Image (cartoon, rainbow over all chains, first blue to last red; front, side, top):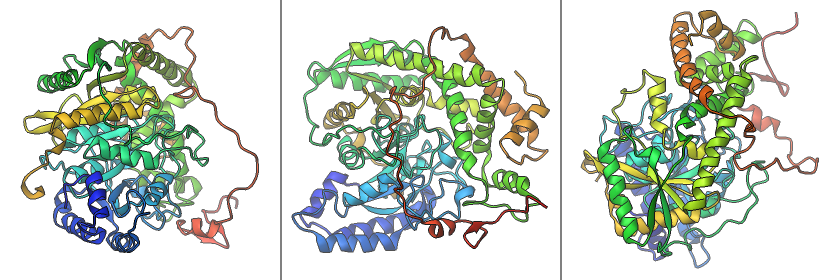
Amino acid sequence: MHGMTLAGIARALKAREFSSEELVRHLLARIERLDGELNSFITVTGEAALEAARAADAARGADAAPLAGVPIAHKDIFCTAGVKTSCGSRMLDNFVSPYDATVVERLRAAGTIMLGKTNMDEFAMGSSNETSFYGPVHNPWDLSRVPGGSSGGSAAAVAARLVPAATGTDTGGSIRQPAALAGITGIKPTYGRVSRYGMIAFASSLDQAGVLTLTAEDAALLLTAMSGHDPRDSTSVDAPVPDYAAGLGASLEGLRIGLVEEFMDEGLDPANARAIEVALKVLEGLGAVIRRVSLPSIGLSVPTYYVVAPAECSSNLSRFDGVRFGYRAAEPRDLEDLYKRSRGEGFGAEVKRRIMTGTYVLSAGYYDAYYLKAQRVRQLIAADFRRAFEEVDVIVGPTSPTPAFGLGAKVDDPVTMYLNDIYTIGVNLAGLPGLSAPCGFVDGLPVGLQIVGRAFDEGRILNVAHRFQQETDWHARAPGGAFA
Amino acid sequence: MKLSRHEVESIAHLARLEISAAEIPVYVDNLSRIIDFVQQLDGADTEGVAPMAHPLNMTQPLREDRVTEADAHELYQRNARAVEAGLYLVPRVIE
């Protein structure tokens, strides 16, 4: 049963080929057996999942919800009522959420069953899942390597076929980069497409929820269920949500695809570049027209991000004060000592580094030079995308400069780690939808093709990935060994 | 640009983060490298470009000012370490 797509599982459950309870038991046994090596889950909610599966089986009928009885996992950044929601941090190790995130609520309403909460970089700050308080996640393709981050637990769990799909969040590449490094599909929708209510905030003008799945079709199914306006998130956009799955299969004849020339430079692993070129040939074979596009300011996206994101993070994370919830230092001398030690002891090194960077760039005398300057450059980057989209319908390039790197390889130098997101960050700065789909292997490790669309054009990029997946089998390849 | 030890201590205070003496040189080094890196932005020509306020240039919606949430302080305070009579306890502020 493991290894089946979400769409396949939904069909099999409907046809009563197996029950939801059988499937959930099978996957829980796999998690029990295999996750010791991966560390992809922080919390497994086995009992609740079995109970929900039995209820789904009992209620199964013609009017069952589309994803009734289908198991998924949630990144531990989404609040889940009555279940620990840690955000990968010691700060929230003791936090039991009093309410559900809108994403959690909507996916449950669509019939899905939560198997547990996945590991992640602390407060989603990282590109390797090594900043988690709960320890690093290992890549099922090579346990000595990272799965990417920050949604590394979701990526590893789906790639290892412990769960058919998982939610993620993407502030600078945190869905697309781990999807690429783990050989699966991941989509970050347009800013405002999915509600951020109950999704623990990192950088509010960039954060967006999405999914990590085995196929573009599965991503379309989940995205349809979780998208849409939510009055509880003031940045959620009030626009109709298409049935993304129903829109799949359209011809790519005449589709104009722009390859970003700035991304195909010496920074990209040559074997990875060849995989992208081969993928483009496949799309060309489907009738698409490939041309080169230029995003002249894209080179400034990483420095822009490392001003904007830490600034917003330093503000968002000021709520963790040791008083109302979260970690509280023992025996504080006075109120200031309570604040400082609760935060100093509760946050890990990368989170503190970003809070400090953000505090610095927002401090008196530096605000104009750093923060306002970065928000101006951000306009230039968004304008580059707008101009390119006058000539092409979708923009493509690599997702990550290299395949999965070794655990510990980049932890000592924050800037080197930050540059890992060089191809993904611009998309967040411009608020656009982007996805990563598997497009080949380099030295036995998966690499991804990134497909970026105009705002609210998720349907089109999902269809490009879907048509690509109908012609190729990269997405169907699974890690072997113990994970087979 | 190299940040001074004093600057790093002052940032840590503004951020209300306890940083040990041993960690200070690490932050001096890390933050200096990050600031050096982001200073590339100085070279960008942004003459006449307004700072971005929203990635899709949307404005914040407003709603009617009325109560939409029921009181749930008991539920929320279950996550607090120290609560008494519905109040959060902190070290004495006024002697």
